[in-house]
Length: 79
Image (tube, rainbow, N blue to C red; front, side, top):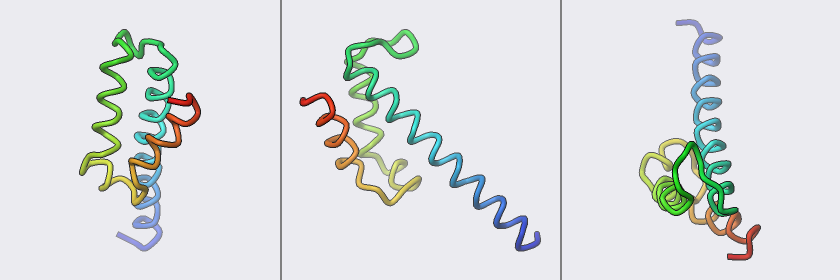
């Protein structure tokens, strides 16, 4: 594998990690607004997203503190 291929692979992993987190943020916002997400009720989506933001898997994907994300999004809804 050349350095360029490594960089492309690394960039792809970063893009995938960012996409996973962004989708969770979108789902969390939708659920906090009271909407269902993919046919699932808002309460279960909120719980799932909060577990994700506090999970080891989330910490593998990013160095961002998941509790900060939860607090920031909840602040948008003044919860």
